[in-house]
Image 1 (cartoon, rainbow, N blue to C red):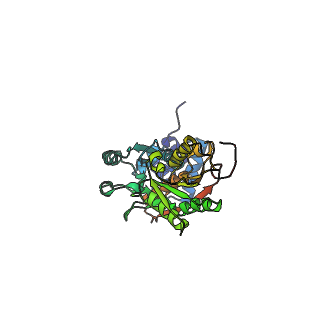
Image 2 (cartoon, helix red, strand yellow; image 1 turned 30 degrees about the horizontal axis):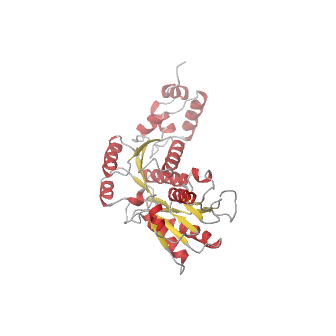
Image 3 (cartoon, rainbow, N blue to C red; image 1 turned 90 degrees about the vertical axis):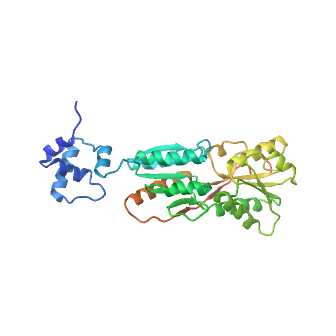
Length: 329
């Protein structure tokens, strides 16, 4: 059986094809149609089970119906969660998403920006903006489509961005360790050239106040660095991946978590709840970050003003800090 076309709807409603298009696919600037006529068109469309084509709507609005998503590393558990959120929100808006994984390479990002513009995407969402350098920012300045960033770059930017309050999250994590009685608290940090890591280090410093502070900056290799430190009884890791490395090191040294050392991570990746002991961490609302970014992109396309958005973090307490005691030796 042939599917219903816009011509069938126009014939049933007694109007032109152009009128049906104006009612069912109005575009960003709707054409005026009499209310009685519009009701007749919609009634005919319902009766015939006519569903407007997203492609046709995009052509009418002079849009492709595509959003580009650029991520720095899909092997990092945080970014797939953002990608899922962007796809979910875009799907609700009847948009499709093209995902580009740069692997942290400047050349790839520049190539993907050109590719996405050649595919005539309506907007681009770029995740991992906290680590953008001067060369990458220059490449973004050449972008000719609306751009939304997830994360706040180290320098002032003209594009709207959505981020989490990393400083407050770090304070929550450090405060929790202090409240459960830990005195020697070490902060495991990633490269503090990233605003994310710098803000989390700042939050740790502020919450520690006049207590002794110790920083270990690492990409995940902790053993040699910790050999030079007095044994901490509390660790605030700037990411869950670093916290997992700390858990492994504690196990290798036959330390009980949390009795001997309590550990708090940051991000709340799905694996955090499945570890044994399960990981106390700061929830970074990845799904909300992706959803808000798509909403921002849509507002930009509609010509609406868009302001930076900062989401609030939340502490999730699990077995790596709830103690002493527990099942795991």
